[in-house]
Every structure is written in C-alpha cells, then in structure tokens.
Length: 157
Image (cartoon, rainbow, N blue to C red):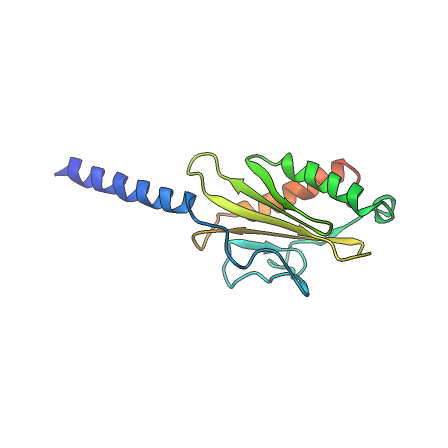
C-alpha cells in the first residue's frame, strides 16, 4: 500500500514539474506604453519601477553610464543578465531585454525583464515566476543578483 502512495506522489510531482517546464511565456511580457507591466497580486513577482515589494530599490545608472550610447548600456546589461545562474537572454531591443531563468532542480522558468525609457537615468527590472504563487524569494534574489552584477561593472549605483 505504501509503495502505491509513494508512486502516486512521485507521479503527481513529475506531472507538476513537466507542466511548469512547458509553460509558455505569458502574454503580459514586454514593454507597454508606461514601461513594464505591473506585477499581479502575488508574492512571486518583483518590479523595481512599482516598488513591488516595497523594499526593492530602483536601478539608477551611474553618471558615467548615463551619457553612454544605448547600445553600450544594453551590452553591459546583457552581459550582467547572462552572468546570472541558469539565465539566458531571449529578446533584446533598443530599450528592452527579456531573459528566461531556469531553476536547476525542478527546471521552473521565470521571466526577467529590463527596460529603459529613452534618456532615462533608470533601468526598470521585473522578475516573475511563470507558475505558482510563491517563489520563496527567488525573484527578489535574482533582481538583487543583477544589481550586484551591474554594480561590479560600474553601471548602477
């Protein structure tokens, strides 16, 4: 009897993991007229432009980087994003970058977005889980990891 329960639990877990891995990118990704879309009412999303959660700080470009070409800024951002574990850039334009971050064990995919309005001294960063309601702080850790990578490159304060 116990073997049947264990097998059932493993089967359910495998189904959930495979469903999470195959989840397509949501329609809510990409820049809108006002920048990046707001986070849903869930704790699995971080948005520096909306201060969601309230303790997340904005990403201000250093004075040295404010006057650099958009291409130079995005090259630095892409390099920093690509340095994050399990993260791959999938879209890059003149004012926007999107990457997918895949967890090591369960292969869950989260979406990381970076946007800069023309002439703005700020990068807006948004990171959200595709599935589930809780992320156990992973998206906030990712955003802070990106902040550190950009600080090391001298791009943000």
